[in-house]
Structures are given as C-alpha cells and as structure tokens.
Image (cartoon, rainbow, N blue to C red):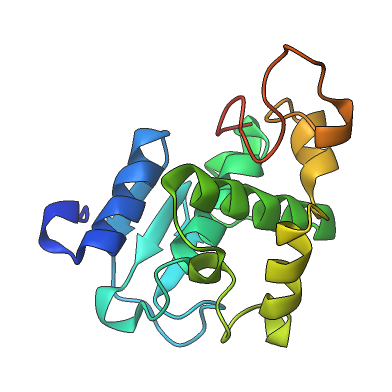
Length: 164
C-alpha cells in the first residue's frame, strides 16, 4: 500500500511529497517496536511508514537520506547496513533537505533523536561545521563550501542531486 500524502497534516504530507519527488518510494505498513525510529523503517528500497507510530516528522528525512546516499546497486536491497560514514552522510543529507524545504533544523534534529546530541548538531550545522559533507561531495551530490568556485554551483547545503 502507498501513502496518500493528501490525507496527512501539511508537514508530513510535504515531507512525503518531497521524498517521492526525488525518486524514493514511500509505503505504508504495520511496523513493530524493533524499528530504530518510531514508525519508520527502510525495506526493499523504500521508506516504510506506520502512521500511528510515526512520532517525529523529520525522521523520515533521515531515513530517506540513508536510501539517497546508498550506492544505486545497494539501494533496493531488502535491508541496508549503513556504515558510520553513511550515517554521517544521511545526517548531512537530511539537513540539506530541511534547508531546501525551508524547515527549521529542529524538525530533523529533534530533542528525542540522535542519542541526546540533537542540540549539538543544530549548533554545529548553524555554524557551518558540517558532518558528512565530504562524503556527499565524493558521491557527486554537493560541493563542500571550502571547495566551491566563485560563479560556480552553490555549495552545500545546496544539493547538485538528491540521489547518489
């Protein structure tokens, strides 16, 4: 079953719409409590939603970020096994998505997430101290600010493309 973004609150609908627009599938399914993020999982190349359990809207950007930074050949695997670098790249990707959508950073880096480190992420990203951006550049998805050329493409958090 596929989520109909029109029936959701405006923020959740907007997030789902963006994720679909860039080419990532979003599906509905009942999920158990084993998921790392409440009401969200990644299965078979899609973000899977359990609406009643989906607590924090911005978490969907983080999960979509894992799919977006995965190698194309790995993206449709039944289960992803992101490395530490992929985790950092997903964090950077989700921040860029929030900026692109004009959302407050706290939507993605909410107080209940990131093992108590959300405020540190907010402060660091606001100061231009970005984790994960070198990998996004290496994947051809963005340009690190210190490597941007005058008159060239805008640097991160602008994305050259949303999928690796």
